[in-house]
Length: 333
Image (cartoon, rainbow, N blue to C red; front, side, top):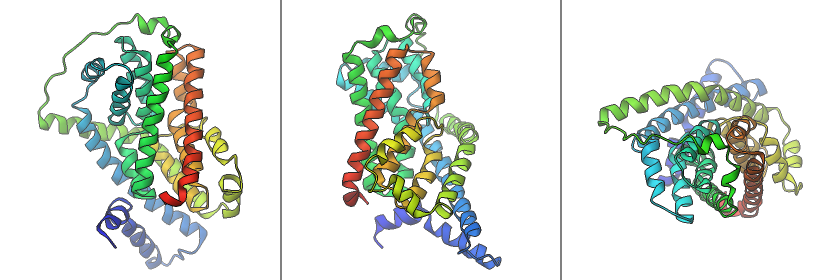
């Protein structure tokens, strides 16, 4: 086993943990070949693995976030124009909140500060869909090539989507109270390393409390798929025999609400049952970017025409990327 395989399988994927749990269950007299026991093993393994990675990643990302408070982010974005501004906004989205509902208040703040609407939408698309946490978690399950491709293509959707909205001059479709709110430019205090560490620790606790229920739900669904749903069913719906699998996966994902940490166990189980990679990733992107609760929140800030355009751009982009991943699956997995 090479060094990278060791990092991916044993450090990030924690395959050793699955073996330890399996050995522990066997030592207690349980048959790991039994469906119920297999489901329990899958549940325990994924919950512990994701919890460890989740807390570690939130701490690291929050520490980085402490250098990019909203005021500083606004100033950084204000220095760029055109597609450069959209690209920077998309990149800033990778070190900000983990779900779309958390991103919308920042989007509103940026819009109130007078940043171009296309730039703010590039941020809004990127923030829940592509973050540093998703990169590491995807690497732990799907490998480095899939993770890198997912992040790159997600950033492309964010940049292209924001650019289209900018070119169509959709400012008039942002609710007037957002545009007229204005913002107070407050300089963020310089934090010491200890203060940044305390901030990061607080974010770990707050974010963990918020997302852990979705992790449990996601892992539970994944355990059911992994041990109880016949492989033939998954292959029939999301496999190569169904040319509409990507579209179906995207549409199914839209009404749901979860973050990247809750959707990955489901994606892992679907892929293991024979679903195509593109269909699985399209489902993940739809859940994290276009969840119904976040669309309801966003409707409070933008008018129906702009909301419909945002949903349309994201949906079409996700479907295109899904089919692209399906076409390239043999090279990526």
